[in-house]
Image (cartoon, rainbow, N blue to C red):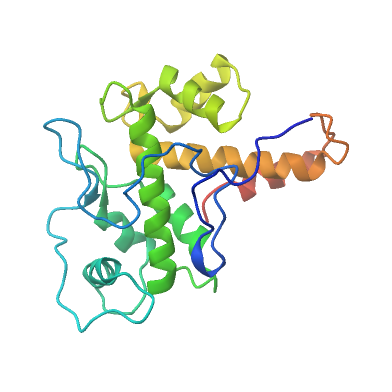
Length: 236
């Protein structure tokens, strides 16, 4: 039984031990050029992704060695309580979709948890730099599959995206994903919902694969093990 493959070409492993881009990460062919910049293109006349209104770069004394200056300025602007770390709430207030709606809190908690190496519930500057690169890579993937530039990944586009990521799933499954993650009831996924659905698919695939020791594509699980799989896939 073959599972979706290893890290796609063209994406380096994230710094500091952050998750490598494999099952739940951008496939080959994601648009280049997003990893370093903060001025992101929108869809026609729509506002772009990125900073929420009022989150201009704050003045600073320069970044530490190895930190992108733009990332450093952005970190200062987002870290409103000047704690030196960013919480899920601060991240949510700083990130917007194409229609200026803030990222949902589940996606923000999920991303904080992925890059929070010390399990503090917050991320420091280096962890934030890895997270920002991750978001920019996903932005390129989202743009690639949002073929009609609606600002949403609709069911047909989502099926294409999952298929090209290596997931062999049915249209019925796609319909369930859209119902689950379409918080705006627009028959499609906004950028934050798209990220969360892809990470969910990666996590569940990883858990399934760990139990499929014979690589048959089938497993037997106890009720408690199944419940653990579900609970571990929820943002903390």
